Structure formats: C-alpha cells, structure tokens
Image 1 (spheres, rainbow, N blue to C red):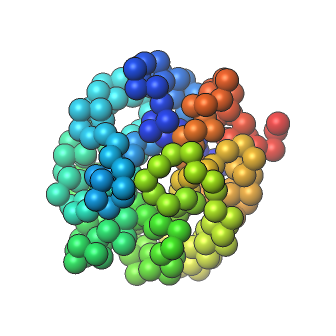
Image 2: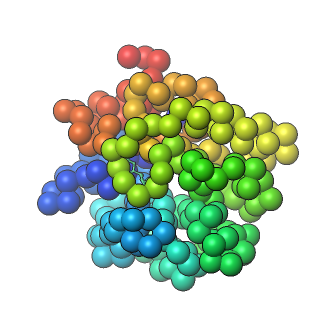
Amino acid sequence: MITVAPSILSADFLHLEKDVQMVNAAGDIFHLDVMDGTFVPNISFGFPVVEAIARKAQRPMDVHLMIVHPEKYVDRFAAAGAAMISFHLEAALADGSDPGAILDQIRSHGVNAGLVVNPDIPVEGLFPYLEKTDFVLIMSVFAGFGGQKFIEATYDRIRTVRAEIVRRGLPCRIEVDGGVSASNAAALAEAGATILVAGSSVFKAPDPAAEIARIRYPLSF
Ligand code: DX5
Ligand code: ZN
C-alpha cells in the first residue's frame, strides 16, 4: 500500500492553513523539510512553522532534517509533535557522530527513526543501521530544493535496500523523496517504496487532492 506524504516546502506559505487542511483531508503524512543552509545550500523553515502546523495537523508529521548536527535538534522536533524524524547518514558521518546513537535518540521519544541518503551515497552505507531504523529515505534528487527532476537510478537503489530488508526480515519501510509524481508512483511502489513524498507535483496541480489520489492509486487512472 502506498502512503503519500505531501511536502509542505511546496505549499502556499501565505495560506498555509488551507494547504494543511488539504493534507488532513487527502494526504497521509505531512512531510516537513528542515534545511540549515550548511548541509544543503538552502534554508527552509524551523520550529515556528512546524509548531504551527502541529496545531492543525490531523496526520502524522514527518520531519526530514537536512542539517548538520541533527542530534542537537531531535528533542525539540519530537516535542513539537513529530511522529517521524529522519536525518542524513552523510551529515552524521561528516560531523563525526554515530548515526546509531542518533537513531536511538529519536526512538527514545517514541518517534519513528529514519536514515536518509542523497543520490551519491551508496545505499549499502545504510545496512549497519537498519535494525535501529524504522524507515529509510532514499533521495531521488539531491536534497535542498523542490521541483528537481527525478533521478532514474533511484529504482535500483530502492531494490537493493528492499532486498537487504527482506533478507534480514526487518520491518523497515522505504520512503522516496524528490521528483515523485503520478507518472513514476507505480514503478516506485513496484521497486519497494511505500512512502512517497511529493511536493511540486501535488501543490502545483490544479486539484492537489486529486493528484494525491493519482499518486496513491497510480494504476487506477
Ligand atoms: C528536497 C526535499 C523534498 C522536496 C520534494 O530537498 O527533501 O521533500 O520538497 O519536492 P519535489 O516533490 O518537488 O521534488
Ligand atoms: Zn524531504
């Protein structure tokens, strides 16, 4: 089953409540991109926006941290109401941090822990941490901006991770983020992704709720 996580980065920030209510009605998860201008060359939003969304959200919040030293901010995003928090493997390793310890920190709040890799990071790097990981997030664009073109090599990367998860009998789910639309949703699901993040394809659609349905049930349209 496909779960659709609209990415609020592409929402209308002047009318955010309208888009939050649309996700409440038609989406499954709020995907919230937090960027620091250091790990990625862009700055998005932080606690005030996440806390405001939390007051209206009737779906789980999935906080995707594109920041250095994610361990400094995990506790506050958990307190803000996140149900899922993910951070980049390559960010933690560059910081000299232990990714396993950060995954434990996230889980200590009763929050689902996710580990992310950019397209240039071998997915095998995720394998030592899969027992501590509730979901892996395979980036299908380079983290930092919405509206980029989907990278086709993502399918094989998802298959590789799925094979390892199945081989070890783990409950870890696979999320994919970047350039996702109704046109590639079926192939992504077939490869093994079950959480599909979609920003511009949803929020730039004339009918965002209908677009979410097309992503969730790609073979029905
Ligand atoms: C990119 C973000 C994505 C982004 C996806 O760094 O992690 O969540 O919002 O946007 P689209 O779906 O437009 O590629
Ligand atoms: Zn994201």
